View 1 (cartoon, rainbow, N blue to C red):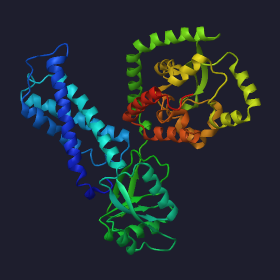
View 2 (view 1 turned 135 degrees about the horizontal axis):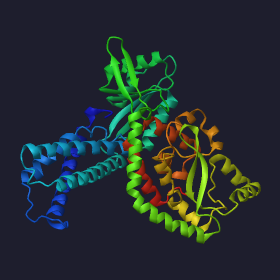
View 3 (view 1 turned 60 degrees about the horizontal axis):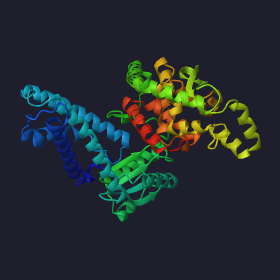
Length: 459
C-alpha cells in the first residue's frame, strides 16, 4: 500500500469483512449441496470447526497477501489478487482433506462451489467497502505533495477525481528551479506522509528532494516521470553497492509461451460457445436478408497481426451502395465530415438500416468474428481491427498493434466503446499489448458484456 503504517483500522475491518463473506459462501455451498441440488445428499455434514475456523482461516491467510493495495489498485487488479488467493486456498484445503483423511466427508462439488461463491462475495464486498470509504472520505491518510507546481496539482487533481485512493491532501510544497523543499511546509501541514512528484525535476533535484525529506517523514512515495510507460508488470530491483535502481518491464506477448496460452484460451472459449453462436448467427442472417436487400454478411479487409490484411466478417448493417451514400452525405454535411475524419465513425450514420442499428447497439453485428478467431486472424481480446487509412493515426504505436491479432473486443470497447476518443483508443490498444495477461483478457470480456447490456457508447 502507499502508506502501510497508516492503515491499522482498515486491516481488521477488511479481515472481518473477508471472514464474513467466506462463511456466507460456505453456508450457501453447504445448503445447495445438502438440500437443493438435484444430486443433494441429505446426510452430508461438515463439522463446525471446518466451517467456522479451519477453512475460513486458510482463505484469510492467502487473502491477507492481497489486501494491501485493495484501495489503490484498479478493479481488474483487485479481482486478480482475490482470484489467485482463492485458488491457492482451495489447493491448500484439498491437500488438508487428503492428509486429514476427510475427503470422504467433504465433497469436491462443495469445495468448488465454496471457491466460486467466495470469489464473488469477497470481491463484491471489497469493492463496496472501497467505494464507501472513498466516497465518505473515511480512514484517509493526510499527505503533502512536493514538486513542481503544475505537476503536483495535476497529480492531486487526478487522485481526487479517481476517488482519493484513501489519500487526503494536507498541503503542498511547490519547488522552483534551484530551491529546496521547506521543512516548515511539512510541519504546518501536520502530515507524516509525503508524495514527491518527479515530473519536471532534474535527476539531481529528485535525489536531493528524497534525501532531504525522508528523515522528516514517516513514509515517502516517489512518483517518477514515466508518462505512458507500460508499468502494469513493472518490477523494482536495487543494487546496494552501486546505489542504482532497476525498473524491469517485460513484454509478455513477446514470449512464445504466453502467445500460446492466449491462443489456447481463444480456441477453448470459441469452441465451447459454438453451440450457442451458430443458431443465433443463422437467425440473424435470415433477419438481415428480410430487413433490406443484399447479402446477410459483410466482409471487409482489415489490418491484422504483422500488418497483414485479412477478411473481417460481420453482419451487414448498412444499405446497398453504402460507400457512395456516405460520400454524398459527407459532401453536404460539414460537421459529419469532421466527425468522420476524426473518429472514422458517425453517431448518426444515414447508411445504417433499422435492424443494423439494433445489431450495432448490441454488438451482435460482430458475432461472425468468432470464426475469424477460430481461423487465427483475430483474438477474443486485442486491439481494435483497423482499416489501412487508420495506420497513420497510430504513428509509432503501429508497431505495438502489429504484435498481436486484433480482437473482437478490447480495452476501448470495455471502456465505453464509441464514447472514447481516437487517441484514447490508440493508447488503450498500446497499453494492452505491452501489459497483457490472461486475467486482463478475462476482465475485458466480462466488462464488455456489462457495457453491451447497458448499451454504453454504441452506435
